[in-house]
Length: 93
Ligand SMILES: [Zn+2]
Image (cartoon, rainbow, N blue to C red):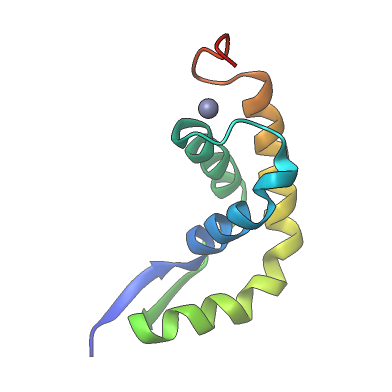
């Protein structure tokens, strides 16, 4: 069985982003989405684990509640910054 070195924080941030994106009230194109996720990931501690593909989802599930508030806080802050300074032209909106 193959074992991966995996930063679970990335998966948790992406999952939480998808959950709260309707409340973020900002552009959700790929550029803005990755900017918001990078902002959050740079401020959250990475959470590296050695895990098999099959174990991955249950490990994310069991850790998510621990980091939920911190992840939401950083995603919300990131969305605020991207909303004020999007990296692309917003005049067509
Ligand atoms: Zn955008």
